[in-house]
Length: 465
Image 1 (spheres, rainbow, N blue to C red):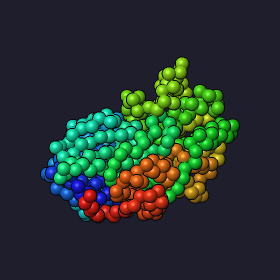
Image 2: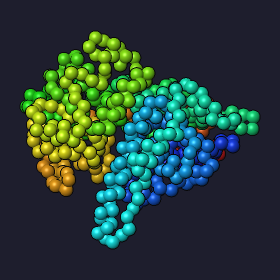
Image 3: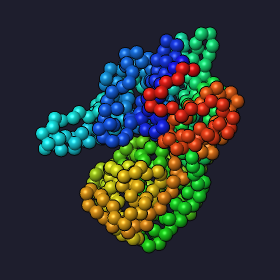
Image 4: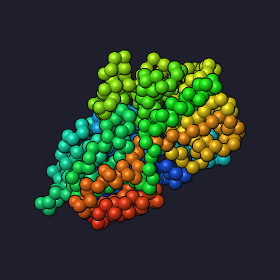
């Protein structure tokens, strides 16, 4: 069995791994690489393996850094199965066409500049139509349902507890009369995240690929986040302000809605309207409702209490759809809460809401996850005195709060606690999906647990097991 690390190697973007197992060739993950525009376009456009020889694609979950280049893969000729959990398939049905629309819009904007410079137009990486066609190749599997991909390879998904439908991937490969078990962690969630179940304990394996996004840091307790959220709401309501929460459409939005539902039901916050203003988040929330089999015991208990049948809906919550509804929120009376994509405030309706809110000291902005450098979300999180929105400078007078405990990734302790049972039986571990510092920090933590062989591969590295 041979693994080549083509993405998610000393970086958290563009996850993609090529696996030769006996006579079978697999692509594990097919995520979008994100970086400088020219490098990003070139790397995503071309695949570093021959698509004609790929027998199957295996996808751990729907986040775009793991799934976002699938429409390009199928547009370039791949027509085999794409295996994912049922919930991941349904999330991709909303997220990949949305990604295609964004690619089309971005290229249209770039081509206006290129036309003025006398340059030829560029093509989008893929279109909305490409993404819709790609959905024909998805094959849904349940957790724990072993499937034989070929005579040499068997696939089983286990719950990774990261987002709805997220999975660990176990590949059992028969070579030369022996079975080798390769376990890919996918993105591992925090224990006790709202709505979804905790990660499954580590299945037995011989080799391990483990993510390391937060391999060098710890999260604050989730219950503390909920209490801080209630305290912020009390302060803003008292001064008749509004709260704007930039949030990712998948996972983060639903977690916040669920906590607001609980806080409202428990009487811990005053009654005020809450709006989810993101078409994608609204579609994704519908997918959450379709998959109660992914819910944890706490959510099931909450679900079955009287008058609380839908954990993602309550009397003061509204999901907006049209542009007109979104614009009307700017003139709606305070206090209120607006949750809107994108999570780093780089695109979408949230920029309009921030433009109308940040100059008023009665208002607040809540940042709920890590913000990449040079993004609007990062500048707000750093509390810069002026921030640029739509090319204009605005004074940042609203209060800014950071609640990073809402991350859907496990922290260093979560990762090491999950991996601890494998210390005696894992022959070789590979630390992936993390920037160099957290990846090497987690690798050192695994060695302290007793792992004898731990590597942090770079892009293009290959290893034969």
